[in-house]
Image: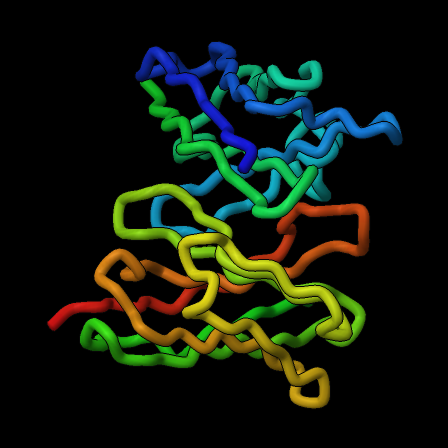
Length: 112
Length: 120
């Protein structure tokens, strides 16, 4: 199975500052078709997860442009520019290169 | 508007069975693969199972393989998860989530979840 490892944030993050969440995969997620099979989600407290980013860097419909995804084949970053109160929650990365689909353990974001 | 509504959760004793349902609306259910994803209390997300639009392709997490069965009824716009030989570690909020057309593999639509508690 592909193991997804997420880094922690130096919480709390001051409002208006930027935050970067890291995710590392145990296998390259770069497919021969040139696409990287990596997604990001935000789960706000008490809510179902929300898709933020797919194909490593494509924002989902309705997602603020304060969110951006980048990376290589095994190392990925979700950057949140100018964090706001509504960004509070747990962020997950997920690979879909192969089954079983796997998620990272989550990174909690708190705002000061 | 896409809607996914899970039901069937509850308190069940270890070793017993339970069947979850997910009713879909707002899209052509028969055109999309579907997934079950679970979240133990206070824990992260764990993908459980996938079924393709026509039920030709089915995949399971190793933790549930041989005990859980995913199925669907496209005429009823309903996804199912039959769970047998339940264990305490199966206690979780179970979400259904829509799969995009291949080669996509993200979950843009989720239900609110149904809680399964396995305890004596």
